[in-house]
Amino acid sequence: MQTESAPFSPPITSATAAPAQAALLAWYDRHARALPWRIGPADRARGVMPDPYRVWLSEVMLQQTTVAAAGRYFHAFTRAWPRVEALAAAPREAVLEAWAGLGYYARARNLHACAGVVAAEHGGRFPETEDGLRALPGIGAYTAAAIAAIAFDRPAAVVDGNIERVMARLFAETEPLPGVKPRLRAHAAALTPAQRPGDHAQALMDLGATICTPRRPACALCPLRPGCAAHAAGIAGELPARAPKLARPVRHGHVWAALDGQGAVWVVRRPPSGLLGGMLALPSSDWTAAPGPDPLPPVPGAWEAIGEVRHVFTHFALRLTVHRARIDPLPGPGRERAAAADAMPTVFAKALRLIG
DNA sequence: GACTCGTGGGA
DNA sequence: TTCCCAAGAGT
Image (spheres, rainbow, N blue to C red):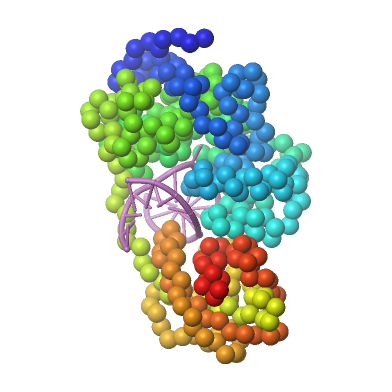
């Protein structure tokens, strides 16, 4: 039933929330992105609901991560572990290896821990309430609300970066992030409908990803334009405001690639928490602020410095001097080089590419 | 509230 | 090249 939305104009209030919600859902019915983990609006209207396991898995993968990057990993994970019980039963090392390259590795550690709790303490079923979900490892305020809304159609106020941006513009909130977050959350909660809350949340995220974009928003195509205070003021593209960001320091370090005669490379496992925690790696020095003299290699040998790898983490940049030597037999566990690169965080994969 | 914690793609 | 930042969580 396609109804002409009633007129609404800024500021959106309880009196005009309903027309805005209707306009948004009508737009979503026509323009929803087809995503591997999503049940589209047409199927949902027929009562088809998504698998909570797949919703959870996708939401964790999508934390601070693009849809394009998460897609490949989503297919690999669902193929290897189709259900939460299978993921819970998998060795931790296998899960971390499958996550290698996707970043923010605490997500993988928490993912495996969460699967264990759901399988062991909840009979393999995800809790349906925000509070129940929020208590699980790796599920914070956003992810709990997203799963509750998308998987269980609960009217939870879902607030991610997209929705923060949409709310900042819709209500012309000019105070910078992160201080303005509580106000944006309140707006999102007030706009959450009792009907189709899952589609509403996904509609706002799609709108933020395709129309209400960070730069040069396509306001001409936006179903919420009639009620958008920022558009009315001509400042949509400038919101949300953000606190100025700090410079990124540079750190320096060394990695050693010990190779045997069969093309295997010596691999180590990093400490279980902290940066790249629990991940497979090449032996490396501490990473320090100044490029001091070459430290002692982890084993004696004919080490040769063959180049430098540059890599950027969230809060610092890294320059690693890469050393190579023939060490046979290896001093510890080895792995074929291409397979090792696939199982390691990107900074070590770069070093392995360098040694050719 | 302020830090820590990855990566790749686009402008 | 450089900057921005994308479906945030844990401490």
